Amino acid sequence: MKRRVFAYPYIVWMILFIAVPMLFIFYYAVNVGGTFTLTKLWSTLSDPAKWKVLWISVVMAFKTTVICLLLGYPIAYILSNMKRTVAGFISVLFFVPMWMNFVLRTYAWQAILEYFLPGLLGMEGTLTGTEGAVLMVLVYNFLPFMIMPLYNTLAKIDKSLIEASRDLGANGVKTFFRVILPLSVPGIVSGITMVFIPAITAFTVPALIGNGKYNLYGNEIELAFKTLSGQGDYAVGSTLSIILLLCVFVSTLIMNHFDKDQKQGGQMW
Image (cartoon, one colour):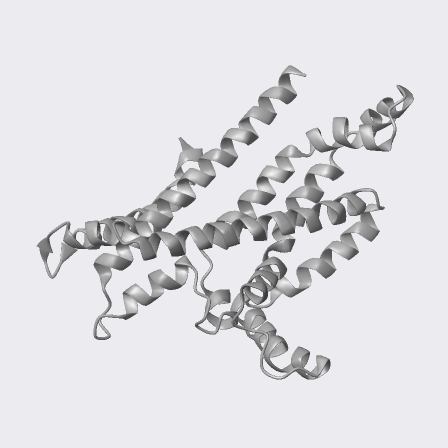
């Protein structure tokens, strides 16, 4: 009973800052001017432009996740084979930029892409406002979130399993694909979850790096709440938020499913 007391502040926090805001989102999605109506809800759901932006956001989040995985896995693997002191020092270098505010880092990249790189390369104009620029900054911001769970998982792999694989005649490639990679699946799943979900909800990077020319779903939500004579169309914004919430929920379920299968397989093995 005494242990449950410590959970009460967390429960209150969950109710005030998660449950209540979500109830307001659902309320405003079906309430326009104090009147219950599904008009705005259905009009938003039937708007192809909104679904197109959502699809673009999903594709962008997928690209970001894949690039982070391709870059993060070798880095995490190399770090896991180093001495803990050296690996710890190098890991700190990856996370030092994370100590700075997310928005400030994005502003820094905006200056780099608008002034520094064009001047360095002798180019006219700016490198912002393109899909490539938005993708690059998203990868930069979320790469540490892929490296961290991968490194933690790879560092915990029993080295005797790798030695046993080599003693049985497996070369480095077979050992990697049959021993190391399967055992690192939990880290891969965690890394994908920590990158894909924030990437699909990102709006700061597209807003600053996209220069209004490349908007993602988060920007559509922001615009919905700010438009309509400056008052904001809360019904449209709330409906878009509900769609995004469902996408995040489905993504989380899929990732948990793969993680659960891996744990069950590990127990059987």
